[in-house]
Length: 424
Ligand code: NAD
View 1 (cartoon, protein in one colour):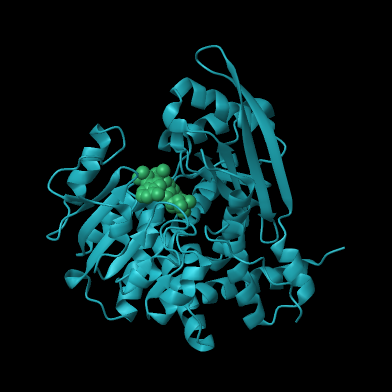
View 2: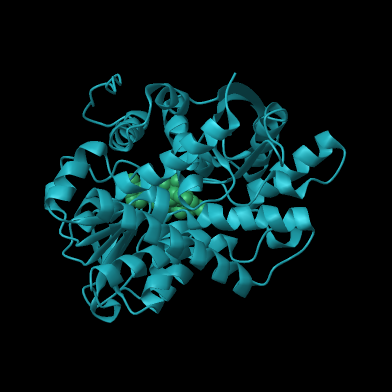
């Protein structure tokens, strides 16, 4: 098989190249035909829009927005919208492809997409963010749709933004269209369990991995990088399952307590402290870099991509890494981590609880029915456990790390479906 090698990696890894390097490895082990490799590596559609928005001071500012549809082979595309100053097309392309593999790993009938706007929501008023979200939705009106492309929240966006998106899309359609977006507020078609779903899936994956590694959760320690939606839920639920959470962090820095962080108190602290844990008491302030190399059993990177790199991978002391964030480990760090014998439950498996419950939200919207939290949790836990078992078995069978095994499971499913559907 004569694949063209992915471009050589630079120091700060381009997320698209990082994704491609794993995709490439997994495709080779699977013996994927070159034609299919080429079909799967290229995004189906890339949309770039320019969004003029009137700011509160009356000035018009132009923002750049993206939506990348990586694949619609398994179904309508699905993926979040990121509002962040660092958003760029390469990042959105990588995140879109990760969504394709993620949906395939957990076996839900979606393709992959991702969107983003280069902006800093932390420096914008509520009104400015609302106008930006409505402008983005208007510009993407022919991209989105319940059977076409279904957005969701990601970094910098949440239920509030999804409500504006749903409202704007519904105005354009002339009818209320709940199923166009997931991650909505509960009162307007959101699903019970969605807010905590990604963190819950991280916990379920971590528990399954600890069972395989024979780590007793009641004697295990853990560090969580990022105390946003994913990180805070993961920390709370892991704590509930008996783990001692020794460190948490956010953009303001990391907070360490050998005897354990009071995670519930940190969550409350964040609520009254404008979403940040800056200055959290009863903990020693350390750096985010130090958090990553603490001697804990479990490390959960749940902030952003490319934090475990070839420069710090050798210093990681955790036995197990469960990736809450998308792409937290660079591809150059993979080999170092594998050589050290650290088990990694990769992002496309570990953080798939969010898209799984998003799928349930879409199903409920289409049924016009609401499930109980218990039903949502039971079904998503089962999907996460089954996906973990499937990937773990593949890893054992092919003697590959779980990351490559997860890609293999996903690529195999999408490739087989493509062959059944056929091309032109
Ligand atoms: P969020 O905005 O709620 O939280 C992000 C947190 O990370 C914040 O506490 C922020 O301060 C912190 N952070 C950002 N950059 C950091 C850095 N360099 N060092 C330390 N902390 C940093 O976002 P989220 O929804 O929790 O998403 C976190 C990650 O999980 C992202 O990679 C996202 O793509 C991924 N993810 C989210 C979901 C979801 O359902 N929200 C689903 C799957 C994957």
